[in-house]
Image (cartoon, rainbow over the protein chains, first blue to last red):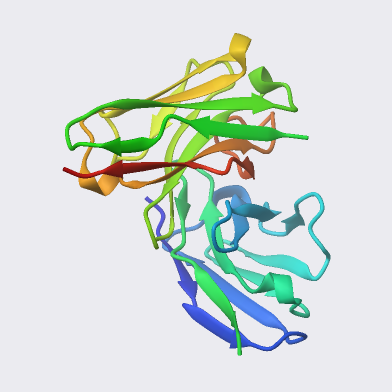
Length: 107
Length: 123
């Protein structure tokens, strides 16, 4: 089983700032089968990024994903008020798994 | 518009059983693998199970293997999750999830999530 570790646990930032979220895998993620999701309170998760760097339909270009192998990053270039949420990474190879989440909160 | 509507959750006792349903619309259901994921109160996301587009292949997390059964009725655009031998740790919101790429099959990202149905296991 691939274990995903996200850091930091909480990120305190102001609107307009840049957010950098990390996701580290315990072993290499095959074919970059790595996705990022956003979840706001009381809502279902929403797909942001798949294939490590491809934006899902309708996702603003301030969201970008990068990385390969065991180290992946989600970057939000300029935080908008609606971006304050919890973000999860997921590997979707054999036996999918999620990271524990990073909360982006307003400073 | 893709829509996934789960139903069947509720308050159940340990050892009990229930079946969750997910009514899908807005896409060609029979051509996509589907999955279930869950989220315990205040906790993170956990993949539960996936099923191929034709229903012939299913995969389960170790935590539910042998107790959960995923199936689908393509003629009715419906996904099911049969849960037996309920445990307190099964308490969670259960999400029905559509995969994103018809070609990838079950090894696939989750592009649309339902709103979830809450299952509470307590005596």
